Each structure stands twice: as C-alpha cells, then as structure tokens.
Image 1 (tube, rainbow, N blue to C red):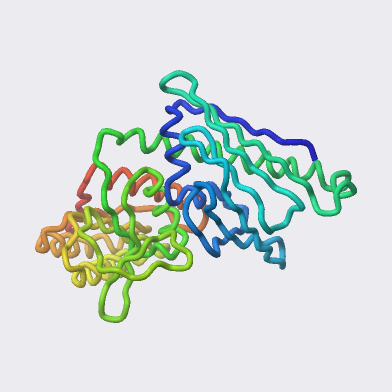
Image 2 (cartoon, rainbow, N blue to C red):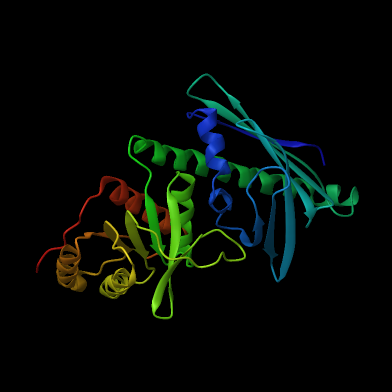
Length: 311
C-alpha cells in the first residue's frame, strides 16, 4: 500500500499539542469507541525504546500488537513501529510543526504492508484506508476538543486528583482526560480495610502506595444509586490519612434521592470537605462518558459546591 497521510490543524501552540500526546492517558484518549483495544503492558512513554503492548479484538480473535517507539524529537516528532502485530509492516510517524506562535499542524504518516501483500492490497487495501481515515479523523477531533476544554482553565493551577472507580469505563476515561491536561491523577482503591493509591495507566499494575493529599476525590458510578455512591465515597474518605479538599460524586441523580444528598452535604461540611454532585446521563456509551467528563471538569476547576435541596 502507498504511504497514507492524515493531517490536522490545531489552534494551539505546537508545544502544547505535543505535550498532550506525551502525557499519560493520551493513548487511551485516542482509541475510538468502536475499537476493542486493551493495553496489556506499557514500558515508558513515547521516547526511543519505549514500548506499548495491546490486545486488538477483531470479532472472536484477539490479536497482540507490540509497538516500539523511535525517532523522538522534542515538540516535533515521535514514531511507533510494529514489532509484532496484525500487519506485515507498520510505521507511524507523528510529525508536529508550528504555524506561528498560536497554531500548529500534525501530520500522521503511516507506512504499512498487509499480510499476503500484494494480493491483499487488491482485496482489502481500500477498506483498510477508509478505516484508517475514520480512525485519524476521530483522533484529531478528540485532540482538538480536549485541548479546547483544558484551555478554558489554563490560568488555574493543576490539581492532584484521586478517582474512585478508575477501573470502570467512565472512571478510566475521566482519568485519561485529566492526566493529559497536566493534572496529577491517581486511582483510589479499597484493599481490605485500607485505601491505597495506584498509577491509573500502569500495566502491569504499579505497587500500591499510601494515598497522597488530594485536592479532590471523584467517584464515578454508572448506576443511578447516587446515595449509595456518596456513602461509598465517604467511607473511602474516612480511611484516607488526609481528607481531600473536595468530594465530587458523578452519576445519574434520580429525584427521590435528592433529599438524601442533603445529609451527605452536611457530612462533608463536618469533615471540612467541599461536596459537589454532578448529575449525568446514564453512563451507557462513549457519548455519555464525554458528557460526564465535561461536567466533572467544570465542577473540579471552578470548585462549585452543588448543594442539593433539603426537601
């Protein structure tokens, strides 16, 4: 197949766009919702010699894809090369260039060869090219949207955030979004009677450590049991060595539970913890996860305390 190039222009400086791609969580943000991809091992980031091993499911088959990075140039380029995977050859060059002080371009250049080349080019070449065009259109749109969201609060300090529920899809998506925005994110987990912290993107899982002092603890829940979620979050707070400055519970909020949240708000005040409830749609797909990210991000950065009605 010929070299394929997919380009995008961003109204953000090249350093900012490159930095977004280099941070933990960027790969997770760039995987489209229609692809079933699971990270199996991660060694490093995007500098030369770092590797990412993933499982890509195609129907009933799970294919292992091992990519190694090379060609790293700060703010200008990094390259991933397939070591083992579905293609006979894959080399993806990410090239960044400034367009003045406030804009930039990204050129994704893909050199690939299908198995059973050249017969496979004639049979499947066009379908593969169309699939890649859709993939990179999503990646570029996601990059622009995330950078725009973070720019809204660029004048505010980056925060240390714990996420309870980072092992579920909504929590994983939120952790990746916040980490690519420069926030220090950790997963907060129960380990028997104690609470521990882990790096959310380490695979295999990093060793558990004592939780650090948090600017905010966020609980994400796909169900509409807001009261149960708040109760769980307060249980976690009670086991933290230092209470967080704020607690944000994000999940659908049914009307009958609204009065119960007044008690949760009072409990938070007793602990000296700011309390916010972010009502979201049912977290059933990637669109609702995106809505969750937008709502939680605003509550986190503005520090709004959403007080539920007393009756």
